[in-house]
Length: 218
Image (cartoon, one colour):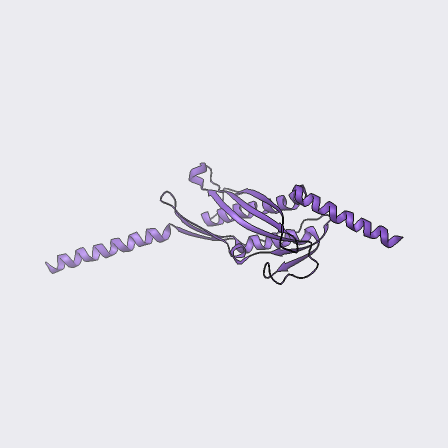
């Protein structure tokens, strides 16, 4: 009898280990690293502070739904590299700020603060194609030296896995996110001066510089 109970206990332990193994197998961790080329163009005549919060620089999206596996996706390092690179090429001078809104250096025309609003993705079994699709939405905030809001706008980015032949789901999703981040960078660069409030701000700055140069030449 004891042997029978011992056998049942052993089977239960094996079952528990098997379930634990399945649960572990269904958890996916993705850490996205990316290096992004600096855009080439004429910088705006502004001195801009850029504040990337800890939440932004360490951003991790976690999902644990009944109809999906568990996913933990860290995009913080990649998007930090992206925004520092793109914003660093857009202006006459860019200063990365360790904190905001206190202890700002003098002479800033604007302070730009991005935030992640949402990250969404679809899986191959949902798209019926062996690729991932990713959407990322950023809320962008621009303030003047005094902390008053100058403009708020939204950047929406899209990316998908560029090839169906990858070794793992994690690698496929990481590639799709990198494509989406490049799309975000292009939208940030080309769309900045299309924001009406920012366009007016740049025009006023250029007008003031032009008047100053005229005065210096007289």
